Each structure stands twice: as structure tokens, then as C-alpha cells.
Length: 327
Image (tube, rainbow, N blue to C red; front, side, top):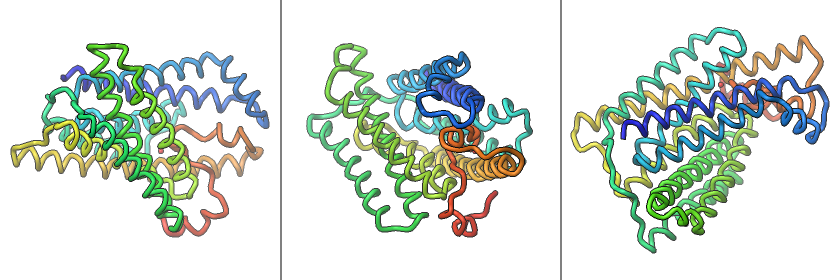
């Protein structure tokens, strides 16, 4: 079981490294080119292709870990991807981590170690009845739709966290279905062809699209922190309710697990705020010292450390006053 945890951590590192390499390749693309020319440029880049391969290996590692370890244990490990991405972005950018980034990285590390130490390492194979096979994705999709509905009637900050929450639920149920299908494949590889596999892919892609809308609200820190917290929490709920995964029974272990989860969440929020602020500062400097990036170039040149943050728009001018600029 311990090796599954190691594979999950290595997988998170591979995804972060892949993203960093692809970002560096994208930044080197010429200004003002079309989507087609950008794609051709990236396909000819060995660095970008290596990044793509590392990302695929990382995702494969996460799926493999899910087959051999409980959701409640493996899913929180994805937060290390944020930590690795921040460190790698600083390394490739030849800059030092800020104090907030160091503190946030430390909090994520300490929190995860405490959480993983307190959680039970062993769980039986996930078993779903015919009713549960329908009920689990149906409930999760219903939760995602409810979040999207609430977002339609809220302001920018409400849309940020509700869209991100919907994405977190989507990623969690995708991992849960991947664990269920993956364990079944150990005995019958042909079981990967079942409709649940297609459903998992559709829900995962839908969650990813919804998350992009959360980033577009201008409240990136709120959106990303919500995603990083809601994903493992939703996965833990699914693991306990549907797969019978165990929570710590000992009061001391339970306290350590809760404390570890809180410290990790604080670290995620700190990293997201600090790194998003650095990304904005870098973008502002680029605007003041060089030609403006437009179109594809503007999107491609966003540092990987900004975690998908977009340049401030006119709608964000008032929002920045609500959320101090501090991934």
C-alpha cells in the first residue's frame, strides 16, 4: 500500500514537471500566431512533447495508485502537484520562492504527512451494487448541476467557488469510477470497455470545462483553493459512503487527520494567493517593459506558476479591491 502512495506522489511530480516544460515551450512561441501555427510549433518542440509524455505518465501513475489504495488516501496527494509546480516554476524561471510560498509549501507538506499518517492504509476492493452504480454518478452530476445553477444567479465571487466546487465534485467522481473500473480490470481487462469508463471521461471533461469558467471570474485564488479542497473532500465522502473506506477510529488519529487536513488547506490557500500575486506582478512588468501579448500568445505566456490565472480584465478592477493581491 505504501508503494501506491509513492506512485501517487511521483505522478503528481510528473504532471507538475510536464506542465512546467510545456509552459516553457509555449512561451518560446512567436508572437501573434494562430492556434494552428501554435499547435504546429508545439508539436515540433521536444520540450513540449516531453512535457506531454510526463503529464501522461503522471495521470497514469495516479490511476494506478487509485487501483491499489483507497480514494480517501490517494486523492489528497494531488495537492502536492501545486507544491511541485511552484518549486519547478521558480527553478525554471531562475527566481527565489517568496516567503509566503515557502510557508505555504511547508504547510502543505506537513499537513499531508499528518493526514497520510493518520488515515488507514488498507481498504477492501470497491464494490458497487447495481443501484449504487447508477446512484453515485447521478448524485454527483446533480450536485454539479446545482452548483452551476447557483453560479448563474450569483456575483463573481459566488461563481468562482460554485464553479470550482462543481469541478471538484466532477474530478472526485471521475477518480472514484476510475478506481472501481481499474480494480475490475485486474481480473478482467475487458471490463474497461464498460459504459462507466465513458461516463467517467465525460464527467471529468465536463468538470474541467466548468473549472475554466471559475478561473474567468477574476477570483482565481478563491476558485483554485476551492477546487484543491473540494476534490479530495468529495472523493473521501464517496470512498466512505459507497466503497466502505474507513476513517480513523482512534480519537488521537482522527484529531491528527483533521488537523492535517486543515493545515494542508491553509497551505493550498497560501500558495495560491502568493503565487497568483507573483504571476500578476510578472504580467504587469511584461506589459510595462515589452510589446503587449495578444491572442494565443497572451494565454500561452502565462507562467505555469500562475496555475491558469488570466490577466486582469475590466471586470476584475473592482474585485481586486475585495481580494488583496498577495501560483
